[in-house]
Every structure is written in C-alpha cells, then in structure tokens.
Image 1 (tube, rainbow, N blue to C red):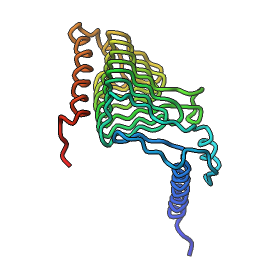
Image 2: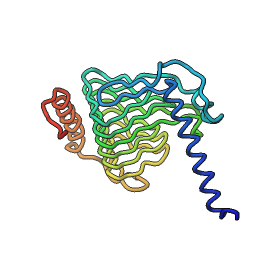
Image 3: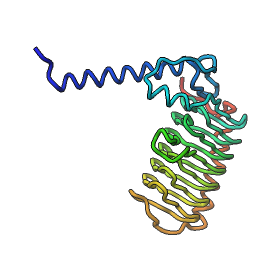
Image 4: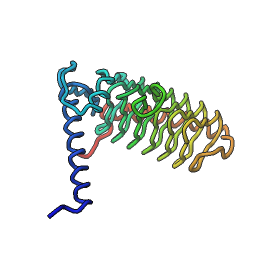
Length: 241
C-alpha cells in the first residue's frame, strides 16, 4: 500500500534536514568556523581548507566563509554560555552577558568600548547569500546599552545609544548617538532613530525627544555595566554551580 502524501512529504523533509545537519557537521570538523565561548577560544579542526562533502549549495556558501578568530579585548567580559562566532570584535571594558549569541560568519560584528550586550541578545549580519547587496556588518559603538533579549541584525548602533529589552533592529537600520529604542520596539529596515529621539512601537516610530536626564542615564547605564562586568571578570561575584 502507498504511503499517504503527507507522510511522504514529512520523510523528504526529514532527509533534507539530516543532509544539511551532516553538511554543517562536516564544516565544523574541517575547521571552517571558530568560536569564542566562556572566555576561551575553541577551534574546530586544524583551521585549514579541506574537502567538504556538503550539498552543492552549502559548499558554495562555505567557500565564501574565511577562517576568523573572535577578537576580545583583555579587559572585556564574556559570560559563560555566551557564544561568539568567527569575525567578532569586542572592545575594552565591554561585556557580553549570559546566553548571548554573536554570529559574524558572513560579515563582521564590531563592538566598541564600554558597551554592554545583555543576556539572551542575538546579533547577526547579512550578505549576498541572504539576498542583500553586498555584506552588511553590524557595528555597535562605544558606551552603548543593549537590553536583555534584543535582536540586532545587520544594523548600526552609534556611540552612547540605547536599545531596550526585546527590541528588534533590522537590516540597514541605525540608532544615532543619544538615540533610544524602547523595549519591545521593531525598527524596520533602513529606518533611523535620530539623536536625542525616543522611538517605540511595532513598527517603531518617533514618540518624543529625550530629556537631558534620560540622555545622562544612557551614560550611567554603560558605566554601571562596565563596573559590574569587572567584578564578574575578577571573580568578585559567584555563580551557582
């Protein structure tokens, strides 16, 4: 008896998934990716080009990925469980908190000085393989606060800006210096939060100008997190194990 059509489709999907997972595993074994996790670098394979028995589409994409080692300043803090992949740079006194993922595989991620990327944040980039015109890096300046579980994709956050918890910043969008994106906001592709402006909503739009006190608090947030990160880095605060 013939299998139902839905079962056949499910089988095909499972085989496709297995094939892609196998190909991804081969890429890791062959040294195509480098990770920075829990304050140590993990190299996959010997770090040289090798033959990969991947599906043609995956092999083509892999050929465009060059071996990179995340560059983390000695005075920065990367919490346990945070993952940095490939071309990621983290500046002095900056902090990457628990369970954040920074994946700079097809373009680069750059984080300046005194910036905090809070727990559960995801930062990625874009390239022609994702349908964009050229590479789109993610650049985050100095003194920036990125709240818990934010999503930053191929965007730019300028010096002393603020991105609230669970906010989403999409391709080509910019948050200018002294700009603030409210918690839960969705900043759509190409939109620009001006300096001294508060944007909120889904999609995000200008709500009002920030007060001098709110701008001052952006600086305070960055400095407070830099001090807190230093305490963790020096093991002055303990974790449950």
